[in-house]
Image (cartoon, rainbow, N blue to C red; front, side, top):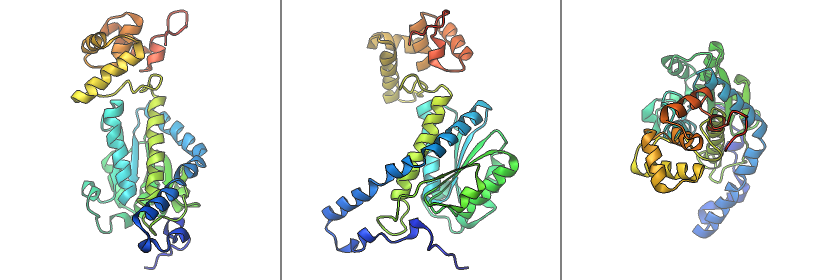
Length: 306
């Protein structure tokens, strides 16, 4: 079946790179860098829609729902990557942010033939996750027309879940199937049709915003510190100590002591220091403040020692 891609910006030839195979490495690198500089301004144009999506994801988290990314090829891989990195960065369970890629885990490294063309495969993947109305599903497709993503968004809509789309073309087909549609058009690719380039960079920037800003919205950040970092290796244990020092002004030895007392919970250690309380008392304050450090250290008069 013939598919018309002529109206997709991501498939058009870039007039600035027509003689790409004749350029010196230095000239090609300069040209590629110039093209990449178009990405951030293009993302800027979509900030209202990105902000709305963040609010929806926070709402899902507050209802004990999940953030589920859905995509094929590069789009799917970027979703899986962002989901995986939420675990150590924000200390969330791996079930809270999930990345689904057409064709399953093997598609992370090897293309699975026909997977992205299925309108039913994503529905099955979401069924396997026991999708509920409390979840938020983000369908990612550079072209904006991937059947796997469309099928997933349709199924999510039927379940009553929040639906968000992310495309790198204007008037994208997947936008019709989402409550909030994010469209970032960066112009034709440096290498015609290679959407792992500018489109992939744009998607990464947007996904960074969706996950990071949503985590801020549920108390995973104090000032600009990632206070829910999971100290799973020596580097992260040292980072945790640095965070406690930066948040409280105490020295390395004290930070090490409090972090040990707090069972490596950065948040608990900070609240212990700031409020001069025991681990149990600090944990209670955090629970009452729904995990927000600043609210946990506000005194009885409502003035915060932040």
